[in-house]
Length: 345
Image (cartoon, rainbow, N blue to C red; front, side):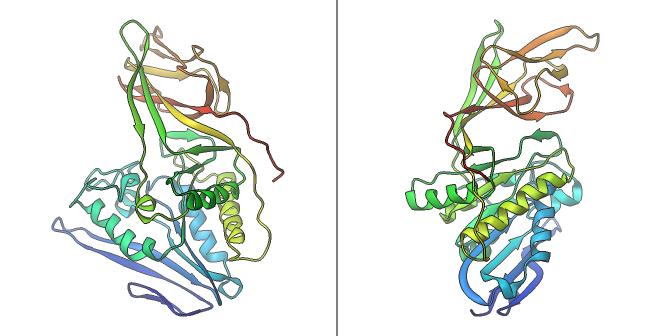
C-alpha cells in the first residue's frame, strides 16, 4: 500500500485521517468545503467511496458514515475507504430538505450533464467527481426519507447497461439484506383529471448522477426519515456497508446477502385538491388498482377528493404533511416484479 491523498489530506498505510476538501469561494461570499475521511489499509485492495448528506436532512446516512469511520481499524483493512459524510453542508446548516438553499438545485442530480451548470451545486459536483469519485472503484451513496417523508428501508440500483458493473451493483445491494429493491429507471407521476380518471403527468427514465458519469458499481440504500435518526435504520445502513466491505474482501468474513423483492416502477400519486390529507393505508401494505388509499378533506371535514391507487403495488413512501396543495405528491407506490427466491440473511 502507498500513501492515499486527496487535496491536502494524506493517509499513510494503516492509518486514518480526516479534514476538509475545499470547493471554492464564490462571489456570493460563500466558502464551501466537504468534510473528508480516509481510512487507508495496510494491504492492497479496492477503494470504496461512502457518500451521505446529498440530501442533508436524511440524517441516518450521515450518522452511519461517522460510525463506520470511527469503528474501522485500518490495520485490519485491505484497500481504502474514502468518505464524504456530508455533501450538502449549506442545506445541513439551513435545515433545508431536498435542495442546496443557495441555488435551489437538488443534489441528487449532481453530475447530470448541464443541471445547474455554473452554479454552486454544479461546481460541488465537479469537485466530488474529479477529486473523490475518480479515485474510487465502487460507491455507496447513502440516502433515506427526507424531513417530510416516511419510507420503508430499501435499496436502489441504477442499471448502467454494462453487465459486469450491474452484476457487482446488484451484489452490493444484496449485502444490505433488503426486503425490497428498486431498479432506478422508471418513475411515473399520476394525477386525476376533472372526471376522476388517472392521468400520467410525467414518465421518466432516470439517468443517475455522479456515479453514472463515473461508471462504477453503485448502490443507493434508502433508510430512515422524518428528520430523525432511527437506530434500526442506521443499523440497516451500517451492517450493509460492512457486508459490502466483506464482499470486496476489504474486511475478513463472509457477507450476509439476501435476494430482495424488486420494484420495477415507482408511481408518485399527486392530489388535485388543496386541503387536509389523510392516508388510509400503512407503509408496507399491499394495495390494489382502484383501491382507496387516502383522501383530502376541507377544513370542515368534508371529503373533496378520494385518492385511489392507479396500480397494484406496495405502499412504500409517504409524504406525511397533512397540509397539501394541488399537484403535491402524497404517496409513492412501488409496482413489484414477480417474487424472487429468498435466501436466509
